[in-house]
Length: 446
Image (cartoon, rainbow, N blue to C red; front, side):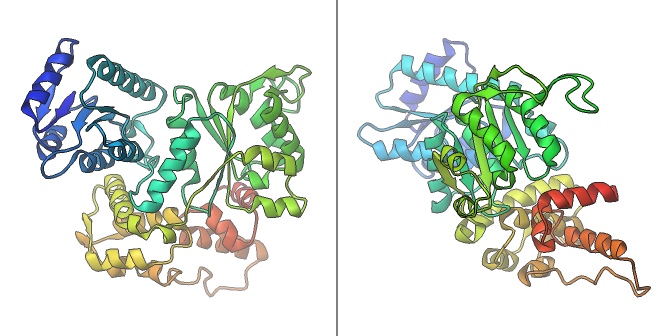
């Protein structure tokens, strides 16, 4: 445990309290000393006062959440300062206590923080254990006013088990928001599963969601549980719900109404307790008017709506996002000489349009690091981003004419390269559904 307080008497009192419970306590008189200790020692929990000389406790909290996002941070606020407590929770504090501290209350809060940390470490892989390319991607980065408003909305809906509808443009991080809601809910110790409903053929999607009985169809050699059953007690994200076939919309509605799940080919219904979070970049209300989405399902899903803002509406977060993605990209490309982004280049990133939002920014920085030849990235490293489309050569060589299949395959591959592998963005550019793009890639063997 790290105890941070500029009052020596308070530090010693807290150390005596927790040392008697078997905790190894480190003491810091200010935020600077606390950060030094964090660099040297592995910690399980931080207890910090808010009012301190120099960097205050809330600023320390911001620093800790950027460098150690999973480390529980408990704030001690002054009596009669409710704004400090509210601000601390918004910024990611696990809990707060008000001076004068009650020892039993503080013990209970610390114990709860450590138990949550333990459960998360059991149910989820640590960042260092994630597959290559995933470390650090499951974080909501940004501390600007727009992101703080979003964080408050996440905290609010996390306290309920009602369905959530997350809306936002492609690439804004809707799945990250869904994961954050789950992580802050009472279901955090149970499974979080996600499925992209537009990426799976209709014939297979029902079996993926509801499971199937043995012999239900060709190839069903044994019974299989669906995602709704596997997520029992936890959360299921239905991504791109706007593309879900109408037949399945009716069956999902029944799950939301009654919790009933019937596997394909089975005459038995089982009851599940699953919180459904749906996400889409489409305007569901418009789809309802067009008769392409069930009105009753729309109202069932949109009990708790959460809108994720595009990157152009939160430009003040771009420096923090850029630093986050740069660190991850450098870790994945250890031979790259790149270590920083120049001020002119950063200014260009802040002023760029980013139609692909956060995902496009991450891809741009990844490419710049991989192909970078100097320690500091300059504007040239991102010039394709500024112009809106990379100025690379047309993919078709001069030995034309090609067959239509050859042209389609080459152009699809080129668009995927230009979008940094972003299949949703590529499908939009090609003017096809995401499921069609996945089918093309399977046929092509990609």
